[in-house]
Image (tube, rainbow, N blue to C red):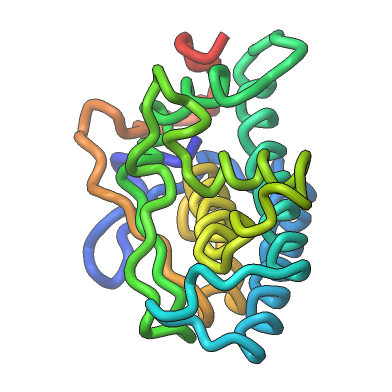
Length: 223
């Protein structure tokens, strides 16, 4: 999980960016995740060359939009399940009842995404309304994914451009939540911005002293 590092290197704005303590150990995972997100953003761009994203078109739906929604939501599930497994979670069947445990540790509700190429699309906060007692239906885009995956004929209208965009945004947030700004490649940064609220100092990492190294610790609330 990415957190600011107390005692770490400052950027040009004299702040410490949220990041994973040692991304080098996870290069294969992060590069693969970046490539998948780049593919999702590219698929969205192809759709938006046909349908201009605006308040008047966000409820447009279709087969390519449905495919993008399913792929993006599946990637979200992959990230969430991976984080939980990495933190010692042994549940064999994971769903939103399990995944919502990540909302607080990763501060998912606070993250927002902007798509630079689509100025008429407002800031997106795909996890802002996530509720523990309504862990699926409170995520409108995720609930739509479940519906159109299992019942395309009856639920096709829910494969909307709005839901697909929110699912792609959720993927970007989960990548940044795991390794900070380093999670976004240069290509991705040309298309999207991901921002979260400042971390309180008690939740930050501290640089190991002298020759000591980082010791991984599983989050107690994810078991």
